[in-house]
Length: 198
Image 1: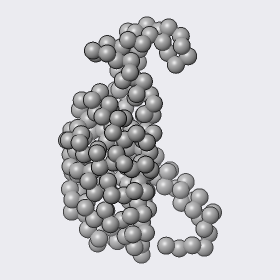
Image 2: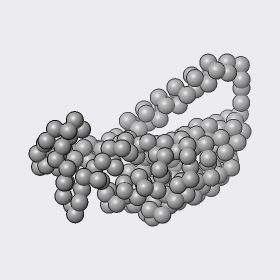
Image 3: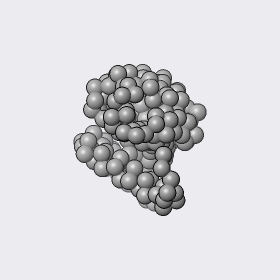
Image 4: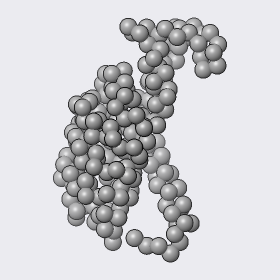
C-alpha cells in the first residue's frame, strides 16, 4: 500500500498536495488510493507494480502523463475514469492484461479518452489510422501517408515489425523519457519562478 510515509521519504520536505511529479516504479504497490489527495500531480510513473484499477488516478484533473505499464489492469472499463480528463495527453499501459488484445485495447482507449495524444509512445492519430485501415482482419487501404500506392503485404509486415519493436521497448527507455520530461519541466519552472519554493 502506498502511504504518506513512503511518499515523504521519496520527496522529503514536500507536502502531498504540492507534489507534481511522482516516480515509484517497481515497488509492488497495489493500493495507491492516497494519490487522489495529491491534486497537483501532473506526471506519474507507477510502471512495474501490481495496480489493478485506474480509479485513484481519475480524480487528478491536472494529470498530463501516466506511466502504468506492466501492472494488473484487466478491465478496459477502468479507462472510463479518465474520459473527462481534458489534460491527460500521454498514457503508457502496455504489458497489462487488458492490453493483450491490442486492436480492441487501442480502439477503446482512442474512443474513450478523446484528448489523448499518445498511447504507449505511439501517436493516437497513427493508431486511429491503422484501425480505420483494418476491416475483418484485412488492411483495406493501399496508400501511404503521401498518397502513394503500396503493397498491402508490405504494410502488414511493417505493422508487425512496429508491433514487435514496441513490445521490445526496455524499461530504461521509459525511465529516460520520464526523467527528461521532468527535468525539462523543472527547468522551465525555475526560470519562471527562480525564488519560489514549494
